[in-house]
Image 1 (cartoon, rainbow, N blue to C red):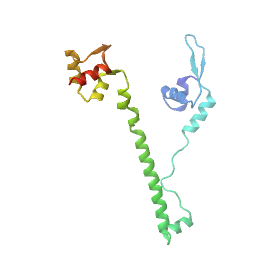
Image 2 (cartoon, one colour):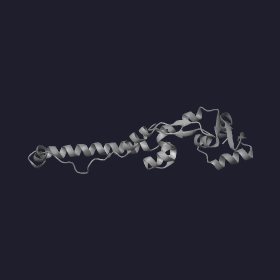
Image 3 (cartoon, helix red, strand yellow):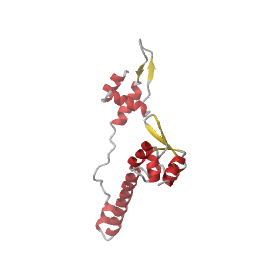
Image 4 (cartoon, rainbow, N blue to C red):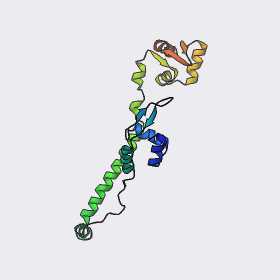
Length: 170
């Protein structure tokens, strides 16, 4: 099957077919064409994916409770049922908090001051973080010649020793 036929068979776009291939959910065989190789897809594999996509993955909102569980919830052991519900809620809350923490960028991704201080050649932003001086003050010092720096491409590079000498002279 061609990509367009596969997309029509699955009821999706040709770009979605490419995503399924990238996710290794379906395989593709490149067949030599007149001008370039064309992708072809196995019909059995597409049928398997279609069945997988149309399989319901949701749980019903209300679950039927057995007679013993219903008696426990309404009887003297009502506290046990409430405790079970509370632990489920606590687990769900913990899951939400962990998911939110994972979604936030961690501080480990940003370089630390110690990492920046160990570098012999600094960018303007790194010199700014290390010294606490503003970007304008550093650029003014570079333009006046008080701070020795070199422009490589569009970015300024400052030697660590030159930055230390400038800070010492302040």
